[in-house]
Each structure stands twice: as structure tokens, then as C-alpha cells.
Length: 420
Ligand code: EPZ
Image (spheres, helix red, strand yellow):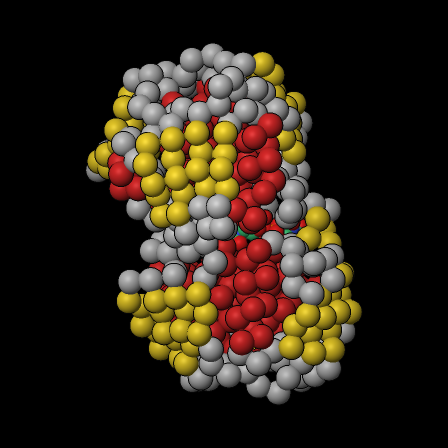
């Protein structure tokens, strides 16, 4: 298993191009199952999760051609039984449930695994399918869903931690081919949901209100092929913005969408980071004096849980005490113990991490765990004095395209080495 070796202390300087959004790409790829026509998606990021989803589409019978950032999918004929082992390995694959139900009125998909950040239940996904008239049961590790024909209805998709992003995606895709009108309350408002709705409407769906908590879908008989360009990855953008900030660098992000990460930029400005925002660029310059700020993760447009770990590294650089509260996932502080090996002074009190910032960080051997925690360890390694080895870098390759290449181009002293 490869590792990243980072010699910290160099301020990052220069420009970085932001790739297409992983969390938009996965449901968009699943949506191509809704039609027998050819669909084309552009600006796809080159990530292991995207390649994995392509394998899942092929396992369902679709023809898939990927060439650099463009994918052509033709799901002429598909079967509703996903490959157990494939689907179980990636949580994001649950978003094939909606399109299989919309297209075939039947699906048998494996329960997605939990992961280090939490149990990752899918009760709201199944509730949504039932609200469209499907009979759903879980048996022997599989979700079995079946309907004579899906019938539009009303559905409330709010859970104890707010709306479900992929649950909303599944509902949009299934309801697009249901008979009649569907009303979703407490829908997820993430930009990735808006992007999916835009693609579905280009395919002939009739969706209104995506990006707001209330979405209406007027079902249609069939959907046609369409082309679509995936939105920029707001989490990758936030990660590189914070990489610039934690190294006191001067970094310009290109091909990003600043309005998709306004909560992150607001908190970075509150912490003293100087940020200039353009139409699809962001320039990050060093703070005159960093300040500690408190963060609570929320559903969009609140502070995103996927940037919580990376923001913690900025708070480690900021003198004073910051309280970072994680409201979306039950165990998303895996990075704290690893940061402590680098000299970080953080204590956990229930859903909150109390960060005592302003102490110097020193390089250490650390272990990646979940995708975003691993990115935080890379940021900490660049901010620390000395050498940091981030092991199990496959976690990072799931969600960051060519992270070491992009950081080297910004002047970071980072290399990828074969692990033990
Ligand atoms: C999406 O996951 C993202 N993944 C996650 O990004 C992101 O952290 C998450 O949304 C929240 O923003 C993709 O889009 C592929 P949820 P998703 O359903 O849809 C609870 C990353 O690092 N819940 O919105 O699976 C759940 O336990 C990944 O890129 C239920 O209770 O997340 C959590 O507490 C990590 N029942 C909360 O809702 C359900 O049926 C939000 O989960 C579904 C979810």
C-alpha cells in the first residue's frame, strides 16, 4: 500500500485546477441507467470511486467507454441485480437503487458497508422507495425492492442528522419515471443534487425546486440520452484553499465554484485568511494573524462535514481554543489521534473536538483512515516541521485526483512511495 512522504514547512505558491466533483459524478453515472439511449458525462474526475462506479454499471449490463474525463454510457438492456461484492465495497453505489427502480420497477442490491465515519444507515432510502409504492425488504445482506409500477407520492426525507444526500438522489431518479407527481420534503440541498436534477431534466424529467428543501417531480413515461458537464468539486476546492492557508502560502484555485463553498470561505475569513473570490477562481493569501473560530458541521449550505478534518488543521495553526462540533456523522474524528502524534493538542468531548491551537506541529508516521481525514493528515504534514509519512494512501485516491502531483506543482515537498 503506497504512502505519501511530505517534508513540511514550505508555503504553497501558484495555481491549481479543481477537478469535477466526485459526489456529483457518482449519482450522475447511476442516472445513465434510466434510459436505453447513450449518455455522455464530461469533466469526470480520475478517481478510484469513479472507476468503481463504471465497473458497477458494466456489471448491470451497460456499455461504458471512459476516455480521460469523458464517459459514454449506453444502458440498452440492464438487469436489476447488482454485483454483491462490488456494491458492498463502496457506500456511494447505493445510488443505483433509484434508477433500477425507476427503469425496471425491481432491484436487488447489496446493503452498502458502513465505514469508519459511522454506521451509514439507508433507512431513509428505503422509506423513499416505499413512499413510491415499492415493497422493500432486507434479506441476507441484500435490499430487495419491487413494484408493479412506481406511483408518485409525498415523502419526508429528514433523518436525525438532517436530510440524506444520496437518499434524495435516489428519490429524484426513481420518481422521474413514476406515475404521477412526487413531492419531497426535507430534501438535501447540496449542489450535487442540483447538478443531478439538471442532468435529469436534460434527459426529459420534470423536476422543480432542486437545491431547496422541497422538490416536486412530475413522472414521465421515458427518459432520453443527454450530455452533461460535472460541476467542480467543492470539497477538493476547500481542501486546496485550506492547504494554502495552513502553509501561509499564496494559492489560486481555477475552475472552481466559490458559491458552493461559501460557509467554508466565511469561516476561513473569520479566522483571518485573506481570500479573493472570482467567478470561477479563488485566491488564498496568508492571514496577518490567524484567529481560532468555532465550527459546527451542518447540511448544505452550512459548514460541510467533508471539510471538518481539514479545517481542524487550520485551527491547529491558530492561537487559542476552537470548538469543532460534528453533527452529521457519529465518529468522524479518526484524524484526531493521528494529529496528536504530530504534537496536536485536541480533546474530544462528545460530538465536539476542543482544539488548542498555536502549538508547532512535528512530522510523524501517520495512518490514513477515511478519505477526508487522510487529506487533513497531508495538510498537517505540509504545515509541520520535519517529515510525515501518510500510510494507506488508497483512501485519498478515492476522492482526490493526483493529489501529490497537484501539491508538487504548488511547491510542496511531497512524493508517493510504495508502502511496506
Ligand atoms: C454523501 O453521503 C456524501 N457522499 C458524503 O461524502 C457526505 O459526507 C454526506 O453526503 C453528507 O454530506 C456521496 O455523495 C457519495 P447522507 P450520503 O445520506 O448521502 C444519516 C465524502 O467524504 N442517514 O447525507 O451517504 C447518515 O447516517 C463522503 O466524500 C440516515 O440516518 O450521506 C448521516 O448521519 C463521506 N439514514 C446523515 O444522515 C439514511 O437512510 C447524512 O447522510 C441515510 C443517511
